[in-house]
Length: 82
Image 1 (tube, rainbow, N blue to C red):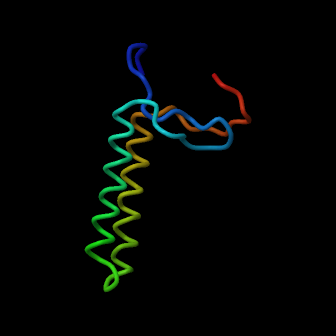
Image 2 (image 1 turned 30 degrees about the vertical axis):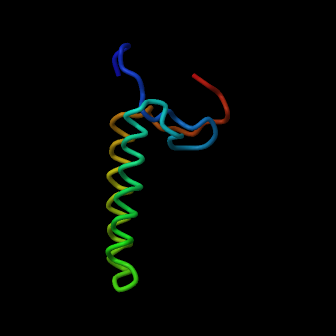
Image 3 (image 1 turned 45 degrees about the horizontal axis):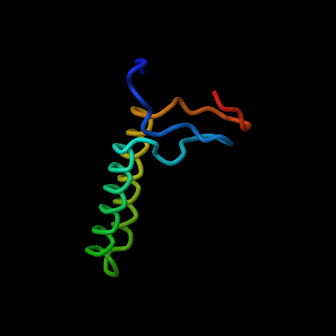
């Protein structure tokens, strides 16, 4: 990212992956994902639990893609801050 851009999702301090969002755009993405999951659960449960699982996996996959695009590069960390 260029020096003027800010990460939406910083890398976790311990382990691999991303932490909570640090920019408002990241929070909007997180809330949209949670909202989509809630709407899908309301519409699909209790009749189609398997369909809900596929929808949740798809939403999680999209969230991972956004984190890869707008977040720090994930790598294993032992508590250091760079």
